[in-house]
Length: 313
Image (cartoon, rainbow, N blue to C red; front, side):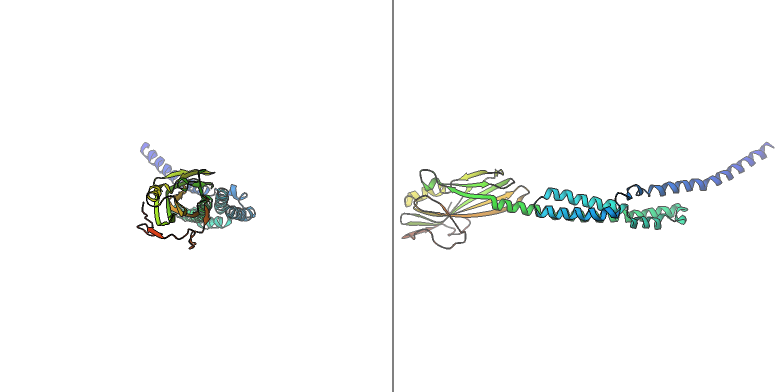
């Protein structure tokens, strides 16, 4: 009797557990379904009635700020546009219809395997669309960055000033050629070359003498910081020994520099100055072929010629 009771109890217990199994599976499936339905609380905020206005506003504002030179604010504007696009996508009706198609049907919810496969395909749509908006945002940010670098290049090129300063004594040999940084960014001056197209002393002309007067990097800070070199000191002894004091000079100053956002990109700026016995330097066009100094009776040309890269010194 006891043996039969035990068998009956085991059979009834197994039947009871079999009845509970579908309920357990159903609860697990329902929990998985609810986890995918996280979008509803945000739908009102990112509805197209708002997103259709704010997204174009953020994009157009970013473009306007970038064109106006306010690149930092343009970054923020495009980031806001990208984040809003992603939030709109994850709460959009398009994605909701796709979710209902993949994991919302009763037939899918009854099968754990089908629900798992539907969730995987749904996440492809979810993350694929989000990644697309993220890539577009990064493209806009990259374009702003390129425009920012181009603006900084122009700023350095236009506001890196090269000027000669004759000392009170009027001695041309002691003229300081100054590089002044009036831009808004740090500039590193790598080299300064001084090339005498024509340097006359009495009746002798020296042609193509070129020397490097700065051979190590110098940081020139924004807002008016400067660095000076005396170009004619490199040839003072040579000229004084052979022909006496300088009576006319046609000098080209070449500055190799880089900006802090592109430290490996070397830019070059040229300036040409002409002076006479009065010691007043006047800027001339770098490509002007006119001879501003009187033609002497005798001449000497440096090893590299009038326009060579490597001069006598």
